[in-house]
Structure formats: C-alpha cells, structure tokens
Length: 259
Length: 336
Ligand SMILES: Nc1ncnc2c1ncn2[C@@H]1O[C@H](COP(=O)(O)OP(=O)(O)O)[C@@H](O)[C@H]1O
Ligand SMILES: [Mg+2]
Image 1 (cartoon, rainbow over the protein chains, first blue to last red):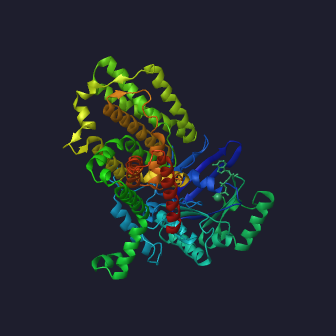
Image 2 (cartoon, helix red, strand yellow):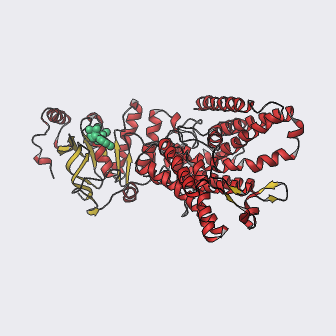
Image 3 (spheres, rainbow over the protein chains, first blue to last red):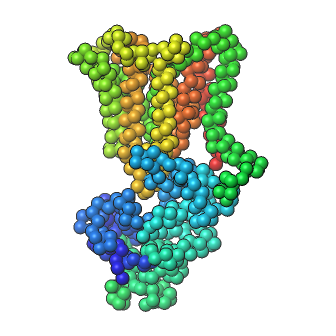
C-alpha cells in the first residue's frame, strides 16, 4: 500500500516529560488506523505532531506521500489535506456556528476581507446535510456554547469534513457522546474508508475501534508497543494482547504485523 | 430549507423568530442605546435650557473624542482578552517625539509622523512583552505606563511646548477645526476611526481572529490562528491611536503638557466595559464602546446643568456603570 504519511524516529519532549519517544509509523492511502493506548500514552501529542501544532524534537522526520516535510505547521498540514477532530474539540464557545466552521481559515479575498455571506450560506447547508441539525432554533448565527456535546462534536467533525481532507484524525471523538451519537460517529469513520480517504481513529473503547479500522497501533508510554492488521487477529485475541501490554509494556508475537 | 424560505414570503412565525433572533443578537447594543436615551431624556427634563441648545452637543462632540479615539481601538485589546493601561503615557510619549523632531527640524508634519510612529512603537513593545515574554498585560502595561511617562519627563525635563506652529498648518483645521461651524473635526475622525475599526473587527480576518483569540486561545492555536501576532497587532493599534489622540488633544489646547493623558485612564476603560465588552474576552462591539463613551461624557455636564454639585458626578458614574454592567451580565446569561 502507498504511504500517505510516514513518521520516522519522531519524539516529543516537554521539559522532563518524554511524551512521544522514537515513534515510527506509516499510514497508507485509504487506510484506517486505530490508535490505542492508555491515558497519557502520548496519543494526543502524536496527533499534534502530525498536524504541525507541535514540532518534533530534532532527528524526527515527517513524510507526506514519500516526500519529506520540513517545518510542518498547522496551515501547512491543512494544505496537505490533514484534518483533525481534536480531543478538546477546538471550538470557540462565544462565537457563532459559521465562525467555528471556518475557524482559522475564513473565506476571504486577497486583502483578507471576509466573505460572510458565503460562509453563512455554506454553514446553513452543512447544518442540514452533514450535521443533521433539525431544530429550527439553531441557525448559522447560533453561538456554539449553547450546543449539546453531540452537537459540538458534529460541528468539529463537519468542519474536518468540509475541507476535503486526505487524512482525517479523530482524537477520542466519542468521548461524552450518547449511544446514538456514538453510532453516527462510527458510521462517519466507516464512511471515510468508503470515500477512499485515510483516517487515524483514537478511542479508548476497542469495541468502537475494532470494527471500523484496518490496522491497530498500540502506543504505550510514548512508544509504539506493537501494531497488527485487523484481519490477523480476532477481537478476543486483541483484548488479550492489550491486557498484556498493560502488564508488560510490550506485545508479543507482533513480528508478523510489522510491515 | 433556506432556499425555499428565501423564495417565499416569510410566514408570520418565521418573521417573528427572525425578529427575536435579531433582538437577541443585538440585545446588548439595544440596551446601551436605551441607557443613553434614558440618561439624555433625564437631563433634558432636569436641565432643558442646557440640553435643548446645540452648544452642549457641540462641546460633547469636541471633548469626547479625546478618550473615545482610544477606547474604540482598546475594545480590540479587551476582546482579545488582554488589557492596556499604558495609553495615558503613550499619549504624552507621542507628543514628546513630536517635540523632539519639531524642535530639531521645525517641521510640523515630520513631528506629526514621529508622534504616530512613537505611538506605534510603544504599542508594539507592549505586545511583544505580553506575547513573547508571557507577562500578563495588566502587569506589563502598568510597567510601560510608568516607563513612557518617565521617558517623557526625562526628555522634556518637565517642560511643555507651545503649538502655535501647528495652528498655522492645515493639520489644525483637519484635526480640530469646525466643519461648517457645527461639527468639530475630531468628532468626524472618531466616526471614521470607529467605522474603520468596526470594519476590520467584523469583516476582516484580523477581527475574526481577535474574537477567536479572546474566546479560546487554545482552540485558535490548534486551528492555526497566529495568536501572538493577532495580540501584538491589537496593542500596536492602541499605541498608534493613543499617540493620535494625544496629538489631537494637544492641538486643541495649543500646548503640549508633559502630564498629557493623566486622567483619561478610567473614562476610557469605563467606556469599553460600559459598552458591553467582556473582560473575559471573546465578545464586544465598537458600537457599544462608541455610545458608552458619550454616556460617560454627558454625565458630568449633565449633573452640573441639572443644578447639583459636581460632587455627585462620581457617585452617578459609579451607579450607572455598576447598574449597566450588571444588566449586561444578566442579559448575557439569559440569552445563552
Ligand atoms: N503541552 C504539554 N506540556 C507538557 N506536557 C504535556 C503537554 N502535552 C502533553 N503532555 C504530557 O505528555 C504525556 C502524553 O499526553 P497525551 O499526548 O495527551 O496523552 P494521551 O492523549 O495518550 O492521553 C502526558 O504525560 C502529558 O502530561
Ligand atoms: Mg489524549
């Protein structure tokens, strides 16, 4: 499979804390990768390295379609086609829905003047298609601070979707969602596969992850403890191994899975 | 749904909900206008001779700009969840730059440009200290307030400067002249600056980022907004505006006093907060600040004209500010 994204020897240290340590990871085009790991394993930090929010420590390299990317930044990552649904949702609560959808990449002319009409119109359209807002009380002018958890997640996902990403990263998107909202979210991940795009899906619940992914990567204390293709392993075997990681910090019998 | 709604005339309920939506959206602005009208009506009732003649309005239009010119751009800083307390000294620092350059070159225009550049620089320094060194703006700008006042006093040696040379240039009539004998030029400048800043705040990427940065700096950063640059720019604009206001004030009184700016701090800040801008960042309007600056300005002459002693001024100020800000807090909670 072609590599869409590749990390080579990527580390990230915050002062004394080594959040991510010497990670090598590939994501193929049209591959859905599940990223599992305990709280504090470094999943979110890894995500922020991929999106250009954090810079890797010296020595780490990031490749996009087999080309090295120097000085990755948030705008640059977006240009490449990387979209993220952050764990913290990254919304501005007192701002309107349309301002949140276009947060950080407002539609504007070359002098930076906003095209408010188009942004409102696009938002209005997305509300009925992608976000599935049915209440007439919600408009593109509504302030997102008043939304429910599921609605807020809908905004974050729709935002990632709108910009035609090649790679969509979802960091614990089901956190705080109701059952039906979780269902919708998982369907969405499955639809990424169908659309021919790639995704990294982070979730604590392997029952969420297992059905929708092609490959599973387990992160433990900042390092990749192991990875395997889903079709090599039943859910029971997976549970077994995860338990072992928690105990010993490494997966056994994972040679077959390293590609 | 929206295309259908556009094509058809709105049903009464849709009309009503659109109306109530607008009412909600502009609730704070509507409220401040009502407060202003109520105060005006009160003074017209208590002091009809003064408040039914044009003179009082002319005088309000000529003196309110002295701080409204700063309060309007200061709104940006406060929306971005920062504060600037140094502008009072920056007003005098700008005029000090004028002083030095004018004395050296005898050219009013060069002096004027030096004044604006000095203000720009002082604002930029505030931004850099806050953003690059991570010092809270409250602390940083108390520091620079002393710093620039100190520079002013050292450079001028505490001596003022007569500005009759400015009066001989077109700058005088352009900045503080009378337009058709009915409107002071500085009022027109205040309107122009309010419109320009309104435009950048509401119709430009910069303004969008100002709101985002003040609302949630982490989200803004995650989504690729240059938080630091946005903040530095807001401080820089206030510095520039403070120097400009300092020049206008000095031109009006034909003299540069090294104490220029002292006494403007609270009026200016009160205008921003009374105008509905939240100290928590993320919300605020230029319109609110503009109206509020006139509310602040009308109280003192109003009280005197109504026949009370000026001792009442502070009490009424305090009352109006506390009552309005409380009203805003309640409105905000009700709306969300
Ligand atoms: N900005 C930061 N500064 C300092 N430490 C951080 C920062 N971000 C994350 N960490 C630390 O890095 C480790 C990994 O965190 P994180 O990537 O959020 O883990 P996960 O998402 O897997 O729960 C944790 O110990 C966390 O405290
Ligand atoms: Mg996390």
